[in-house]
Image (cartoon, rainbow, N blue to C red; front, side):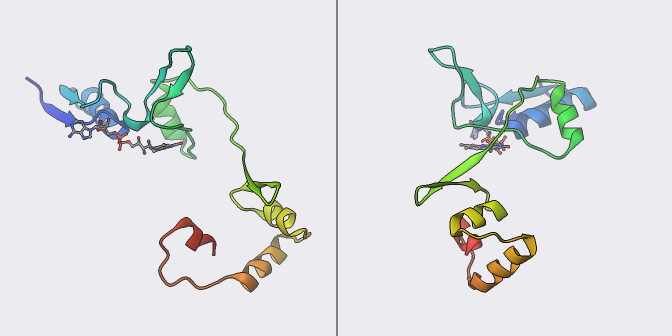
Length: 137
Ligand SMILES: Cc1cc2nc3c(=O)[nH]c(=O)nc-3n(C[C@H](O)[C@H](O)[C@H](O)COP(=O)(O)OP(=O)(O)OC[C@H]3O[C@@H](n4cnc5c(N)ncnc54)[C@H](O)[C@@H]3O)c2cc1C
């Protein structure tokens, strides 16, 4: 018999189960229809011995030290530098869009204040913002 039944062993279910067990000292049955814990963030070694994310790549990022401290009880960390470039008209440009992106895309030499003016001069009103493209426009 268990005090709690939690369905789904992803981040949400796993953290909840851990908190109940460690803080309330109550028993939890954590079940999942998949054969593993971790939900969509699950990783495993493939047949070549390479660690992969089965459901798509996951990167951990937070500005909360308490979250880092909490998770560090259960995992070690591997430093990772994440740089994304978009290929636009044969140029490799930094993403998310920043001052460097605009200057290199349009061949300009704007500073931060001028960039705001540049955006204002081209900004379009989108009544119903539904996509990432709408946000950029
Ligand atoms: C491709 C991809 C990339 C991502 N990249 C990042 C990233 O870089 N950084 C980041 O922070 N987040 C990322 N995310 C988001 C992250 O995966 C989710 O925020 C997180 O996994 C959500 O956790 P969860 O516990 O809410 O749900 P899930 O991880 O979806 O876990 C839910 C679990 O419940 C189980 N379940 C559902 N219904 C039932 C049922 N009826 N019976 C039994 N079990 C059930 C499922 O099998 C699953 O294991 C990414 C997601 C995807 C898909």
